[in-house]
Amino acid sequence: MTRVLVLGGTAWLGGRVARAWRERGAEVVCLARGSAGSAPPGVRLIRADRTLPSAYDEVSGPWDEVIELSYAPDLVTGALRALSHNAAHWTLVSSVSVYERNDEPDAGESADLVEPQDLSQYPDAKVAAERAATAAVGDRLFVARPGLIVGPGDPSDRFGYWMARFLQPGPALVPTAAGRHVQVIDVDDLAAWLLLVGVDGATGVANAVGPPHAFTDVLEQTRRATGFRGEVIAATDDELLAHDVAYWAGPRSLPLWLPADYTGFARRRADAFLASGGATRSLAVTIARTLEDERARGIHRPRRAGLTRTDEGYVVRDIAGRRRRTSEPEP
Image (cartoon, rainbow, N blue to C red; front, side):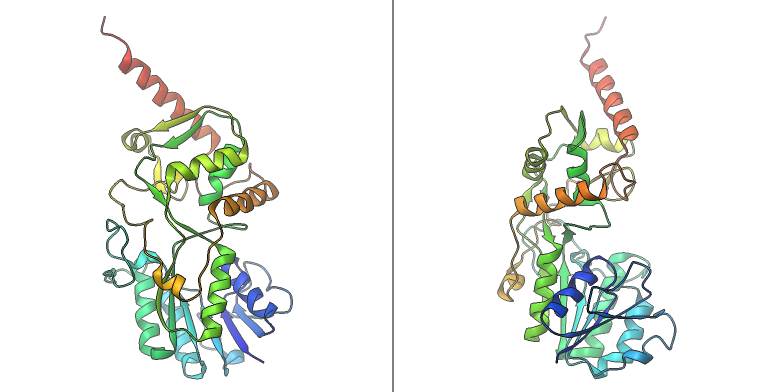
């Protein structure tokens, strides 16, 4: 029987990867603190603090496949020291955030990477993790670089923000989206592909991304899926930044909105992903799945990304007032 170790596996993506391997018939073990929940049915969970020297005592191997989801330097290097010599294949889940430039549309895996300087920063830590894994695992390593992961259960609330927002009355504040793109991968498509590359023993590096979509199209498809009939207020970058609305993610943000010069961040090439068997469902299906999940989890719940209705209302009213005063003729 194939033996698979998932370093993590109780949170979002890790849990789906563990479940996919178990459904294939593998013996699957998850090593995690377990603070994010339990392991999927049929998967053994070993609770451990990976910062401790004894963390890997119960999982010394051998393993046919190890999947590393962390990017914290001490966790990545500790696992490599303890396990890399006893793993037939190692998959490191990295990120498209490792690339140095975000203004090169259609860039592939050979594009320049960030040079790690501050490992408390996500891109730097991911690059450092890739280099450490390459040094320890060599030609048994596969590096997956996902883009924005979306779908049911998303803890970041980025993609789902728009489903939840358009399920509520307007007016709805959106960024001026012309010329912007969104590039996502459904969490279950990513999990299925990570299983496939592990089964195949694939090596190398691949961006795990779906096709780029115009941001305007994403918003329109979401509006139609929710049946939203309220007013949509499109604000310029200057207007949003003047009201301390943040790009991309986090509190007081408009999720998925990127700086105008990030013309390549959501337009990465996916040739290697497709060549290695990767496949993505349609945007419409992922929107429908996320919409169902948002309804189930509650559209009014506290969120990790986006504007609260109170903040959105204030920004809309202030922008409308400023526009009205600007358009009034001089006395």
